[in-house]
Image 1 (cartoon, rainbow, N blue to C red):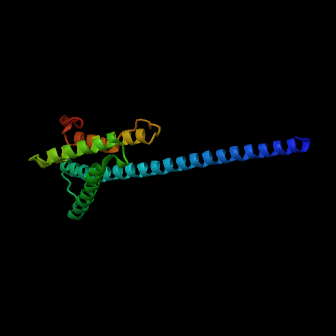
Image 2: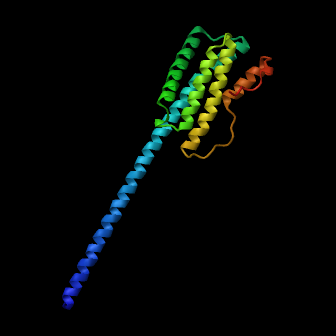
Image 3: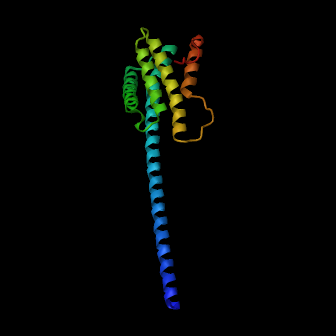
Amino acid sequence: MTFGETVASNLISSFAVGIVFGATAAYFTTWLAFKRYKLEKWWDKKASAYEAILNNLFEFMFFFEKSLEAHMTDREPSQAVKDELQKKSEEAHRSLRKAAKIGSFVISDKAENFLVILERKLDKAIESQVWYDFIDSSFDAATNALDDLRDEARRDLSLEPSLPLANLSHKTWQRVRNRSGHADLGAPREG
């Protein structure tokens, strides 16, 4: 083999090795970028699902919160306001039932379980013979579900836990109970 052939052979083999390594690096870079893209899209879907569930839960709770405030303070809202609150609450409850039925396709199994527990508590609250007890039990169930689902969403989405901020609905609930002389009702019940 002559010097020229050796140089040409080394040049060709160096070029071939460069092409193989370059193609392999490009393949893995593309593969990793696509995998990251899919994970980010899935994270976006999960975040949107949790956001919708938490928003619907808030709308659902708002009806009970306003009903409790009206009951405790003897200030009934107008029929139009009651009808609007009732309509929003029913729509939100329907969405929450749907999320519980669809379950862990997007949200975690634990979040799905919190929704199932909420549905059971609401079904039990419906059996109450007293309007106040129904509202009280439903509000407590929704408050507990909101707290649990918010924490689970943070965990499932790998978000940093926030500082322990008070749940405004819960604070409102306590304020209404104390102002109306029903402080003996205590904090919302578990279970």
